[in-house]
Length: 464
Image (cartoon, rainbow, N blue to C red; front, side, top):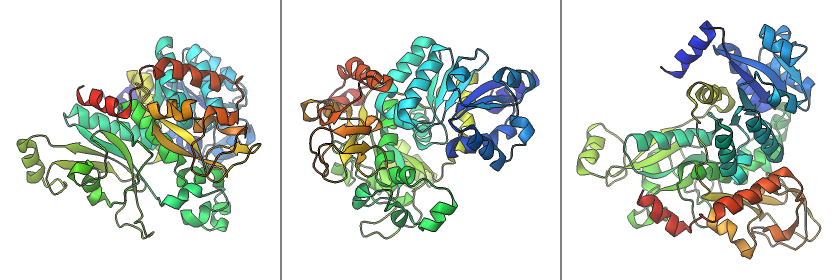
């Protein structure tokens, strides 16, 4: 029985999946727009630091005021309406809630929300992939220990990539590479919220009209978000990552199977079985026709002559050898697709992407020369961007361990850092009292012992 039929059955039985949403910003609002059109689900409560803003967003996406006017969570569960408040703890602790959708975009807070939800028997769909990037393997372990499901969010690119990888492996194809697209030139890593719109392709007036957050958009542009999402994919699929950061090879959709081959065969990969991001711009800045900027892809290998003949017979577009084929989705619809994850975890007990090990990390890296005493402003800001590295490289960085981007916010430097240098724990005055720090350090202890070097990890994956 497919997910939609299962949802219809829950609706017919008057037994909907009961959902709590934490964070009703842009991503959350996109999910809210779909809930009235989805059978078998009931959004019982929304927790947001700004309840009035959440109400405005509900109005914007088409909800009637009566629908979200429940005076309490208990009342909402009785009459099918939605309660809006600012108490996330009450939401995750209520025994009637089945699934929590964590949608704040705040990685430190998201760790607290996820762990508290697990402790109270709630499945979690974690939209805040920034949290997954720095401690996803431990979050997944804690969920399993609690007997609940922890999942990446469908509609966001990591879960869509994981879905393509699962398709390939289930069909019997070896995965050569998988990833997403991006608009990329090397100097974008230095971009700040002051320069983002000129690179993004919007005027400041257009950005202001849309209420767009320059820091958030800059986190995509400067390479932080692609690194974060590639980390989540690597940790969920076991695919390796480039030894010194993403390469962003430029390619049209047709050229993806050409470039996502090993270097020994004319591509850019260090080896088979890696994550990578495809740029939609040529090195001179010219746009590439029919790009994959907003999409996801997986490149697979036809290992036998028979399979390669099938590629040819069914007009599958391959590289010149006929060995490598790329399947892709050119678009992703972000929050409009999150319902797939909610239904999957609640009705099948299956995640739409979840960390199975610690294979990759995203490390805070200086955008410019930074001086002692400067305050780091985290993802998309003026001081650091996120660089994708193998977990083993991050763990041993400068002999002290790399500073994860998700924790590089609101902390001061105690040592100068050169432009382009990845930061370590010893470079900052870390607040060691926050839960997210303790979780990250525990993950390093639990998973770091088994973190192989990139070469040994590849050999292990090739033999599996």
